View 1 (spheres, helix red, strand yellow):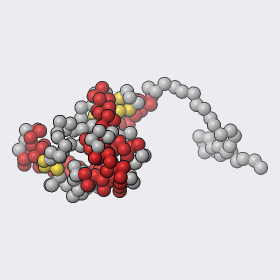
View 2 (cartoon, helix red, strand yellow):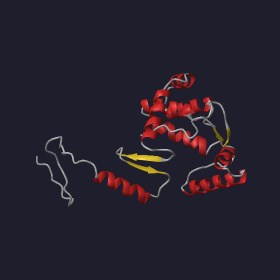
View 3 (cartoon, rainbow, N blue to C red):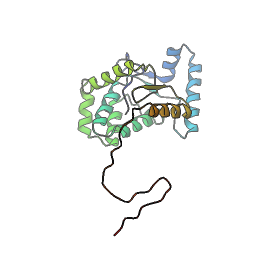
View 4 (cartoon, rainbow, N blue to C red):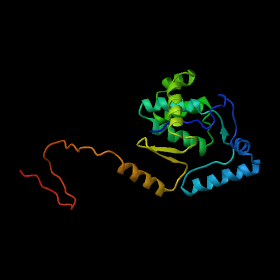
Length: 202
């Protein structure tokens, strides 16, 4: 389940700037240093076969995107819309801070155009859901992204190597309370751990 987390919650709707300029101001770097930071991220992304633009990307309030993602979640299309939004933002020449682009992405993901348009037009639509996610993130100790929560007891912060996820998943599984296994469906053909399969008679 994807939860809402704004990187720049104080930014006003419609206020945009170039990503490189934002990074330079946020981290106290020169524009050239910020561009170098972006180049490093792009190299990592491209090594994994992902598109990543280092020039021309803008930065703004993501509140409307999160509201639209809650609509998508309610319609079972959250993964589809999130994937398209990431691709538009990082790899394509489409700004996710533009309502027309967001509407096009919503329709491409399978959402109803009129319903998505209504959400974008109403600043209160799904706003409480976004704020609830952000409160929960704060309670769980998330102060940056990515942040992964396992079984509501373990948190993984940042872009960690696969081994960290394996260790955390194994620990979370080990610490889960034992539950009784209920078998449903009655008698049927089954295979045991040695690969031997019972052949039903008749």
